[in-house]
Length: 347
Ligand SMILES: NC(=O)C1=CN([C@@H]2O[C@H](COP(=O)(O)OP(=O)(O)OC[C@H]3O[C@@H](n4cnc5c(N)ncnc54)[C@H](O)[C@@H]3O)[C@@H](O)[C@H]2O)C=CC1
Ligand SMILES: O=C(CO)COP(=O)(O)O
Image (cartoon, rainbow, N blue to C red):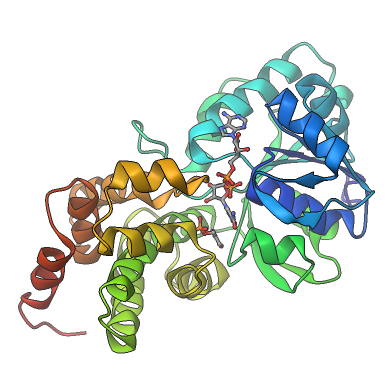
């Protein structure tokens, strides 16, 4: 693989995050954004704005849109191509399978060679982290793409507007780390790198559950002290699970752990936090999810995180409370009482 910065950037997934990061990239180089909904992509092209997901941000002229998946993958192919998968976790396997099928009948030079995913969560059903989904899809293929995860505190709207943001690129492949950082680290977007894929992915997944918790707490009017306690004790349980799954403890103190947790647990742009705020008002989860207009990954992540915690004998009381609240087994008040009545223990 070349260590030259990729010159051909392609984003799959035209929701808030795919559109937001494509706008930021377009400030310094051409980028192609693919979305699966042809009518929506035609509207994007005609109106030069993603009205459904980022209505206030005009698309830069250097951002091209398409609903043609084959054309998008051709754009991402070759040694200078970089493909960003900006679909939710639920769409990751299908997106990766499309890449596998595209690559299968091509010579190496015409294949997608560098692939980075942006989603945060565990796959529903399998309970797999994104990298394990990707590994499963490309298993048995000779010369699979170099892969990695991009994560960290990054509200799409702020990124789209070109405001400063710092992210972490996680990959066990040093060449991919180098080339993806070279492609994406520019202007207001700083990209750090780490080989700790598991640590980065667990941080990104579990912080969404904890953002629901702080949303509930804030929605109940429990105050700033309670929110700080949830963030701090939440970070402790996130780190315990992450280490048990193979992540490195210091990763959880970085951008993809503490950084994203603080952002999502306190910032009202967070969809997960908004789920918590609405639950505290007594709204039904199905109504909240139906009216959100975006994915809130924490709703699916809570139960998987709890199952993993039990399997690894890790204590995650906040995640458990959120999971039972989402299942309708606890009211916000009962969840609070349960947390407050726990026995004292060492910090
Ligand atoms: N919005 C944000 O600020 C950030 C989001 N993320 C993560 O990025 C992922 C995507 O989030 P958003 O774009 O915000 O969600 P969104 O709800 O705004 O948009 C999701 C988009 O993905 C598309 N999609 C869903 N399944 C698909 C599939 N199978 N194939 C192709 N397209 C599919 C939908 O049509 C929609 O356009 C999530 O995992 C989220 O946690 C990460 C960082 C920031
Ligand atoms: O991951 C995010 C910010 O880093 C976005 O969080 P939400 O999905 O809760 O909006």
